[in-house]
Amino acid sequence: MNLNNFIKNHNKPFVIAGPCSAESEIQMLETAERIKKSGADVSVFRAGIWKPRTKPNGFEGVGEIGLKWLKKVKEEFGFKMAIEVANTHHVSAALKADVDVFWIGARSTANPFTVQEIAVALRGTDKPIFVKNPINPDLALWIGAVERLLGQNINNLGAIHRGFSSYQKTKYRNHPNWQIALDFKNHFPNIPLIADPSHICGNRTDLATVAQEAMNLGYEGIMLETHFNPDEAWSDASQQISPEVLAKILSGLKTRTSEISGYENDIRKHRTLISDIDFQVIELLSQRMKISRKIGALKKENHITIFQPDRWKEITEYTSQKAFECEMSQEFIERIFKMIHEQSIDIQNNV
Ligand code: PEP
Ligand code: MN
Figure 1: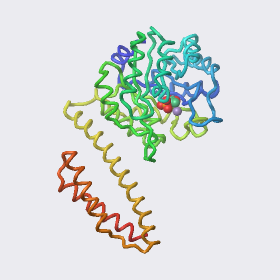
Figure 2: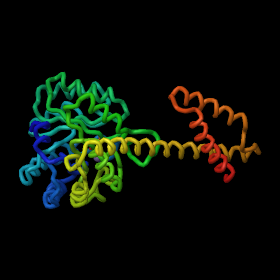
Figure 3: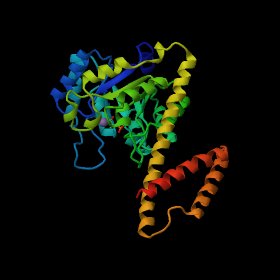
Figure 4: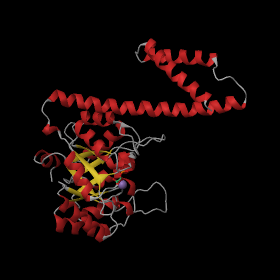
């Protein structure tokens, strides 16, 4: 399966779907059967059989037996099969089982030693290898991982954008930071880029929006975690969807091929980036206000006035300086911060 040719000859988007983790033969077969029946245009069936978990003692995957179940799914329903490989043992077991598609997970991409080992173990393979972005927002690490694979004569490559982890709680499980993925695409224009809305969202409600945003930005495909009984999934239950919901999301997507004009598409692209920044601005403001509330409580306890002119002067100075550095109108930034400061004083008054 040459990824570029396959994607070129296939209706957009290219779709990888299947459970976060393989759990049992029945779960795999029933999920696959229902995907088939739902009419969703899925090319590749995914299932994690070794699962990277943040903390020990969770479900860490069924291991090699899952490869047998994947093979059955392939034989009965004709999907290509995809798994994550994270070390040389995984690679040799997966090559032996003739798995069609591999992906390198976000935690592995962040570790050059791991990527190098996997690349050497896969040396010269013509199977499609997808590289997920690293968990941290570091474009160079993502590019570096691809270069390590290219360096081992592995050329049938794809990339998966699964969002970036951050300490702040936001509406996303992993913030998309779309610009990083677009920069990746600019660097490797010939490597198909697909989005993984499941790991970006961490919930079901935003999947369709994020999938559409990826289409707006010209992504070639998407990966969606799909399970025959999502609520009971052994991993990532909150973000998995049923095959029928998958079909519905896919049929609602507007792809670029159905577009009328290039300029409209460019506008949609820029709007997606702007909305993303707007969300970040609001989330940061919300964090700022939460801190204001804490300061308000301290002022109250210690009988200090809420408005502190020295502090306001300090804020005006550093925001004005920052505005200058960012080539923004200082007057505009001052107006915005006046409003923010007023809101913050209101909040403190209400403590
Ligand atoms: C996965 O796709 O199952 C997975 C573990 O994803 P990520 O590496 O993006 O966390
Ligand atoms: Mn998952």
